Length: 92
Image (cartoon, rainbow, N blue to C red):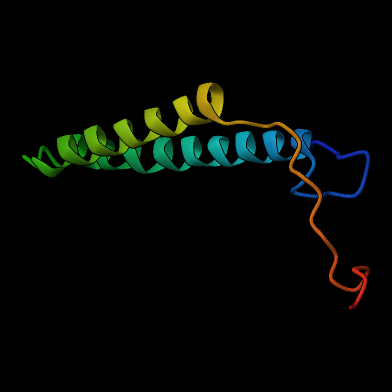
């Protein structure tokens, strides 16, 4: 069952941004796992000498690690300042 958000989703909400970033990271991991395991499966099945599988796995893995480090260690989820609404500003 998918997670439910108890209030109106808003990217200015720090908890929502954190959950959204982690769910995007989970999708990134799932796509990496599916593509990577498929390429290695077919490489083994066909006894092929595909040198590109090492490169794809390595580079994509490093990108995945960098994404994870950003999400779990670097990202700042402090509340964003309120934006000024031009319709409410006094006209001079």
